[in-house]
Length: 214
Image (cartoon, rainbow, N blue to C red):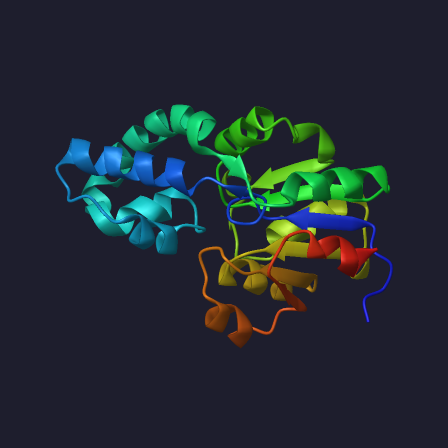
């Protein structure tokens, strides 16, 4: 039984928004410019969630990683505004939680600059009390620091918060921080992978978060 919740923390990609089209476009732009083979969207989708440096490095090698990241980010700043959309029910959930007095936060391994592009483009930055991204931490997800810092910043105890994400990295982060994690299916991790880590709840649609926390 979940107790009273004051704070809902969200992952961004695959949880609130679908930016996979922008990610794939920017990824293959960098591959093409550096002479590497194009990758299928499914391959790229499986590689996201660990930060853009870790997304690119396995495909281009350490020698080309810096150049690839520069190309990717240059393209991505534009692509995000063209190919990012809400996942079903996400905006309505944010509005509902906000109206009912919940504090909201974002915990993402996506760099701050690009997270803010998404939040501002979709006009939802105002709903969040705090946004913390992997580039502001020495150790991003799955390290617990990202959630612990949000809890400290907003003066909320672990038992009064939930974390919502779509990947195994999110579940691991929640467990290490001692925060109940709600896993949403349909993102980068499979149902089997998510189930194996035994999150607090597994849901199919983001709107179910409201039924859990209210």
